[in-house]
Every structure is written in structure tokens, then in C-alpha cells.
Amino acid sequence: MLGGIQKGIDLDIICATETNLRAYSSLGLRTLVIGIRDLTRNEFEEWQSAYENASTALIGRGRFLRAVASHVERDLRILGASGIEDKLQNGVPEAIESMRQAGIKVWVLTGDKQETAISIGFSCKLLTSEMTQIVINSKSRESCKKSLQDAVAMSSKLAAPGNALTGAGSARSPLALIIDGTSLVYVLETALEEELFKVATVCDVVLCCRVAPLQKAGIVALIKNRTDDMTLAIGDGANDVSMIQMADVGIGLSGQEGRQAVMASDFAMGQFRFLVPLLLVHGHWNYQRMAYMILYNFYRNAVFVFVLFWYVLYTAYTLTTAITEWSSVLYSVVYTALPTIIVGVLDKDLSRKTLIKYPQLYMAGQRDERYNLKLFILTVMDTVWQSAAIFFIPYVAYRHSTIDGSSLGDLWTLAV
Image (cartoon, rainbow, N blue to C red; front, side, top):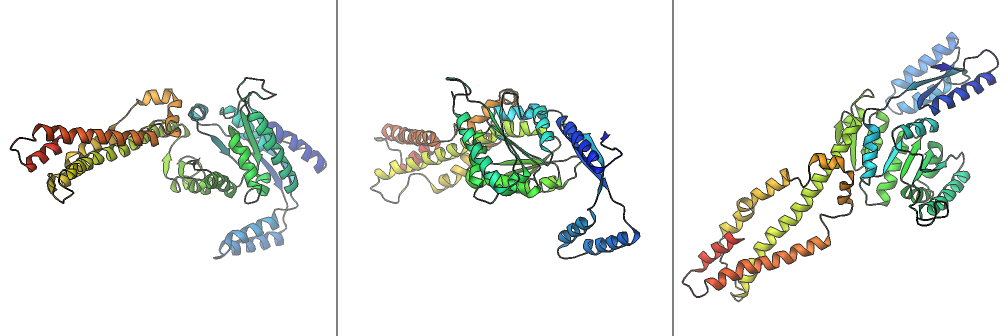
């Protein structure tokens, strides 16, 4: 789709091209501006020689290549603009919606124009018509600072439930922050980072457009350095490598953008929609298994130790023990190993179908429902009374019999 090629002065072509760019961007198309410059033979030979020297430089190759490019890419005559459709993969809108229902905050960092990014945001259900958009487009440090201050005040007002705009008693208005790469230049690694963090954490969705690869990594670091939340980055191109490496979990998509993202990632997958079973299914199962296994391993060892503790009270704190050394060694290695392996590998509290159907179940991990101080205390109390029952019932039953201490120790081991 080509537009903007007109005969006449450059101003007319520029105006027509800008009109076409806005039209293409509003349709969600990826735009490209095309320009041309005629070179004389001497200019071409000079550029070719400089390019060959820069491309073979051992130190500072990138800097030399940028200098050569900036020298030749000037005084261009604009031809027009093109727009191509960058179609979303199947299942992307549904995957983003499921992650948002699961309580996962989704941030999109893209190099597209703002209009294109917003259009894609609506098509993938990242943005909705009910959301209040906070847009930050600044060309200077002062204007960026003022925009952030206004955004902080606006987000604080809109985030409160029952505010003047949404009405008393109503739910708070969902917020979306949209910021461009030029504004991020004045924000990242400056005192304005804290202001951006305040706005971004209040918003339900963050959309960063026209961002450079290093800015993507800077935004991930902004969250990592200020919260204890786990960050996950997913990308499909070489410009996403820095972001993937900065995040706690990096996922690379293998597609037509090459394999640089895959090589730099922790996990690789073919399509974005596979992120849903990875997080909502395997992530939930893994959290449930890990939480259960921590409590279970503490429980099984504490019961065994408390039995020895009760025995010590009746032996005047001597070093004698009724449980043999072999039983103590084999207790964790053999006697209780099978439940640990089976639970740690195969345990599933809910089916895959249920976890996919109800993404809200993923929030159990965010609320620490399976491993917290209350459960830990209850487990300790459980081990105390169980160990007391295991020790004192056989002790009282065989107290006046002729059974020796070793046999009674075997009985305690079996009871445990």
C-alpha cells in the first residue's frame, strides 16, 4: 500500500505522507517512510570505501557504521510511505485476556508508532473502550516532568473507587498508560523514574511505543529494582534480547524474526498463546507442588526429631537412643522417599481444563495461599501432637512389659 507520491514541492509530499502515515497507523499497519538521494560516482566510491573500513574495524565497529550511515543518509528526497499488515498470531487476544484475569499485569514494549501500537492494543484486547488512557508525549525534560506530575495526580484520582468521575460506590476506572520512547529518554536513569513507577504500578495496562532495545531492558529493570515481583519478558526478535535477559524469566518466540531471542531465553516456544498453559497450568502446578513439598518435608523430619526429643526426656538427656543409626539414615533415603517423589512429580490439585477455564485460580500463588506463616505454624503444631501420640501410646502400652528399647524404637520408627 503506497501513498504520498506527488509531483510538486517537497512540502506537499511531506504533508501527504504525514496524512497517509496517520491513516495507516490508525488501521494498525506498520509504516515505512521511503526517501531517495542521488549520489555521484565520487560520493559513492567515498561512501563504499568508508563503509568497508567501518565494517572490518575490530574496535568500535558499530560506532563507525553509524557515522558512515549518518553521513550518507542526509539531504534525502521523500518519495512516500508504505504500510504493511503485521498480523497477530492466533490466540493472542485470548491469551492476554486470560493473563489479565489471572492478575498478571501485561506491559507491551514496541517500536511501532503510537497510533499503530494503540490500534494493535485494541485488536489484541490489551486496551478496551472502558479504559482511561494517560498519554505522555514529551519533547523536553521540563515538559516530561510536568506530564508525569499531571499523570501521577490523575492516576491517583482515578484509581480511588467511587471518585468524582466514576460516581460514588462504583468500581474504580481501569487505567492505561501510553508513553513514547522520546519521553523515556528523559525518564530512565533519572530522578523521574520514581514518578513513572508510581503511575505505571497504578495503571492496569502499560503501552510503551517507539522504544529502543535498551529502553525495553530499562523498563524491566525499573520494576525489578523497586518491587519483589517476578518479571517475565517475551519477544521474537533480536531487539528483544536485552529485555529477555534482564527479566527474571525470559521467553523467546521462534518465528520469522530469527532465533536470536530463542538463543537468549530461558524457555522457547512457537506461539504466544502457549504462554497461557505455561503460566496458568504448569506455573500453578509447580507452585502447588513446591509449597506442599516444603511443608511436607519439614513435617516428616520434624515428627521424627520430636519423637527423639520425647525419648530424651526419659533418658536424663543421655546420648542413648532407641532408634538405630540405620533407621535414622534410611528414614529420609528409603522409608519416606516414595511419597516425596510421587507428590513432587505427579501431584495435580486441579485439572488442566479447569485451570485454563478459570484463570483466576492462578492468583492463589500471588496471595500465598499454599505457603504462608499460618500454614507453617499449623504444621509445627501438627508435628508436635503427632509425635507425642506416636511416642507415648507405644510407651504406655509396653511400659510394664519385657520388650527391650531397641524393639520399642523399631515400633516408633514404623509409627512415624
